[in-house]
Amino acid sequence: MAKLVEVLLQFDRTGSRRISLPVLVNALKTVDATLFDDNFVQGAFGGAGEGLVDIPAFAGWVTGASQNKSFVERPEEQDLDELDLDTSAVDEMLSQARAKFDGLDSNHNDSLDAQELRELCTWTFTMFGRRFKSDKEKEAAIDKQIKRYLKQGADWDYDTFETYYLKLQSEIEAHEARRSEAFEKGYDKSKSAKKFRELDADGSGRLEGEELLVFAAWILESFQPEGKPISDEAKQKEAKKLVQKIMKKCDEGVGNSDGKLSFTEVDFFIKEKISQIEDFKKRAKEREDKRQAKEAEKKAAKEAKKAAKEAKETKK
Image: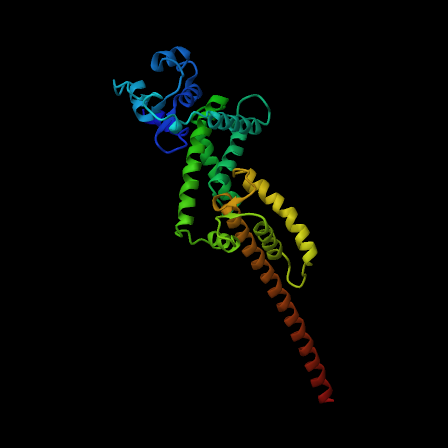
């Protein structure tokens, strides 16, 4: 019962633990189209008409944990304005699942083997912002996750992947909600949160327009070697190009494609760039220290040679 509730709650966009009957019917078909066929829908609901379904109550009835069948509120019992009758959210999520599966299925045999599941691991780690100190650590984490995956079968067909994907999306949304709340309430004191607040000049909670260009310019300038300034014209041109790449990665890749960047859409990217910038500056300092050490060594050798020569001439 708990598992069924967990799956169905992925389609609850209001947080009320209730969904419209048409949405529920479509969701059930993604769980098991054979079990939850038209005959089931007719017997359980009298058809897929309008209504609002209490998810826990329905799950209790369908699993036999409860005999109470009053889990559907019909339009005459509930204001239609409160009903989530739009099934597009379900269709969109299923479409995303199919697209992701096809993208991972590199040999196009309609199943995912262990190697293809490695790409799923990498994507999952990215979505949760998991970073690794080394490639060795990352490979070890992937190997560990692959073992978990393979417990469900050596090869994943689309149905197996779809169930995993829908559950994962629910976890990603919950993770984003927690990060967003922490940021909005000021609990997040990370470097990425501090940088986002600095970039969000109007305090709207979104980076857009000129703020995006400032964001891109910050990245460009941070990776510019000292002593090699970049002209304003070149910086503006390169910033526009970089904005397009950032939006493709953050807004279209993990966001909602609204042309703006919220904190949860870009925080992992900022965190990554801050780490890269710090590493870049560290390596630049190490190179400069080595250069200065060599210069000092050459100078000392030259002075020693000069002193030896002067001492030799004095003896004469």
